[in-house]
Image (cartoon, rainbow, N blue to C red; front, top):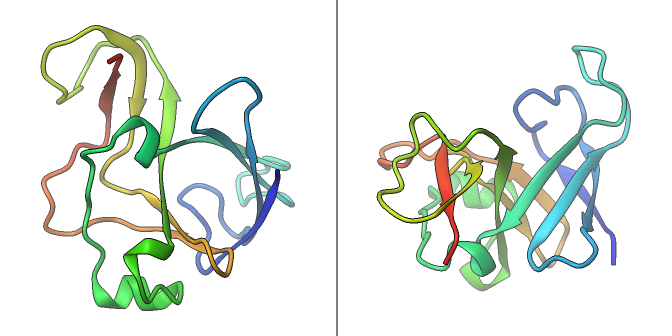
Length: 142
């Protein structure tokens, strides 16, 4: 089921877009495509980001939003928050910050999650100030 989303501020690199569709990727659990409607400032038409549902893939990931951040998307309760992280295919090398384990070659951005108010479909990508989280954490297979 596709979900129409409105972002209060365009996600990083997707300026000036605010209208998106979140679509689950078939035959996967907790993987979505976030597709923008329109053209970015850099000329990309209908851009796409891949997002992972943190509840499925990173159950111990528990970032804290500021009151201002939560209010900006009308989030009154943590239960209404859908927490997503931007996923990037990669070589599996570099600054992973994930420790040991079998790498997937995919990294996720834990410093700037996408948070959606599941009741309203309003979302934003937030930079988490004061939280020691990596920009590129290797996704480790369980």
